[in-house]
Image (cartoon, rainbow, N blue to C red):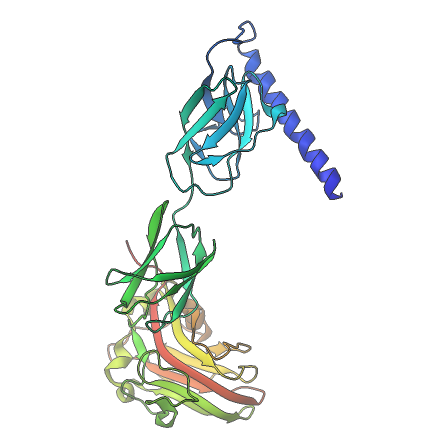
Length: 387
């Protein structure tokens, strides 16, 4: 069906809906003539004539609604808050008006619908514009330095809005789209949740910016069996910028099925950091994520990275498999892996250990890799934060 036929079909469909609604509600009062009386609204409903009980006190932008009342035939304009709706004369009758709520987001919210008639009179009716508060899903990188730009993903990012970091400091907006925004991180921003506020509500993130909770592999200071030579303490001009103190950089050729331990060790070698994984994560891994920051100056396009975390008895040489490809293009990016996927890969349930846990980052897989990959902040953190 071409676009012209679709338009014709949609017009006919809307006309039939309008006729059906008019007939339905005119029949209830067919012996009365409201011509010449004062306009009034009885109620607002969805446009399905069979859903007589589906009355509305509000609607989302773009929704088609039916205004049912008396003496509505001379309506010239309809405003929802400060946004003017598009009226089609065919869909305006004495007893009903079909109209779509404007798609544009109002600047001033009054939750009022106003009908302006040809004689200049107006009729107002309480009608709520139902727009979601912001939804915050993730950040491209949860670690961003002051003065640099952070990218936040989500939904319902409608201006005007503010992004507030822990410590009550508001960031400077660089760009805003409905599903993505960029904000310059202010000086003084602290680790913790971020808050986004619009005219339609405010939301705190379920993740932490600069998340320093439950880190089980860190290079500040280095602990473990492997591999102190990979730790970058003073980045040079050719090194990635440090985002949280020391970090790990693997810059070498890795032959297929060679064995290269990057970091980690048993609990006694790792020290107290090996005890940072919460008991709840071990018992209910479905409620947690493994996160770490990754920076690839060359694509991770071969071989396999094997991750051991939360193991209480020994290492596992076969899992978890973090497979290529991934290429962050020389920028830090937060990697998120559901912790229950990792737990299941080990073949038996995890068990709580008061002595700490085995941890290891290992390259071991098929295919040669010309590696230049940096890592930081391996942590196991909750998927959501209790309100």
